[in-house]
Length: 359
Image (cartoon, rainbow, N blue to C red; front, side, top):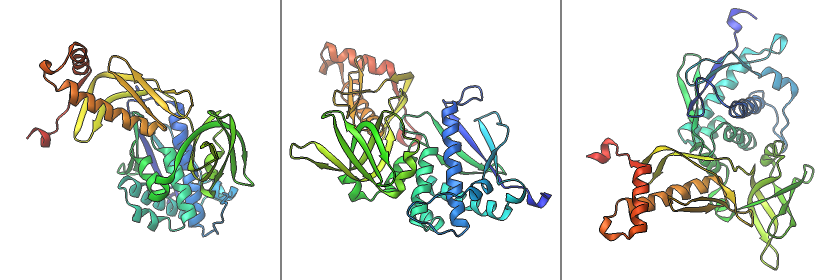
């Protein structure tokens, strides 16, 4: 390898409360690197002009030519420098540079919420769907307290993923009419049949098996879904008793996430509240195992929703409602219980006003 053939490089920067003293949880770093590697391999197939069939499989040669090679982490926002490319005869600087260029455009388009930019960078729909699923895997889930920025070799940021990234990708992947008809079902994973493109789950309320028929683009997600409880999003067909009997047009399959929600800010509409200290809320499942629930007695919270994202949205909405009805109300209009809630809210949160609101 000559000086002119140095592999292109960029870096991941993880910012937020998840990193402490230049550290980051291994699971966060692993999910970012694993999904980034998969995105590079998929883009590599496009760059090499390979035919994209229904079940795109990455060749070993492509994978090795586009390996992300991690360098020593740097302190600060936990920066992980990486170079792209294999070693020896497998190294192709032209291919590595071309793929990095497409990857940068994809990341920038997702960051700026540009669907047109995504289509221009990844014109093949099958590749685009799979790359966007990898982007989802790199982005923080609802309630996460970290974000990911990607910098080029000169230190310039070319994209940032935050908790709004996954909702944008979902809206891009699934047409509005299909999202409106979709439903989320939580069940116990029984089996996966890759030949028939079918996942079988046990539906807890009836203990019956549900066959979930998925599309090609969902298949990549299945290799990592091995936990007992998973959530399947698709069109639900009902039996004569009104219970689900089959799920078709599956657009998403994910592990059920019951990890703690750490709340330090609440945003709803123009309202923004800052917590005096981080509030840890533990989601639980209701009796049917179909709804995630949050209860907090002193704040009078009782929130439930089928997914973690919607649970967080409902939580923000309920706190905003309580703030308007109790924290901002005159004491004369409240009974003793309501006044106690008002004082708890005022001790827990402070309203944040930006310069535009303050004028």
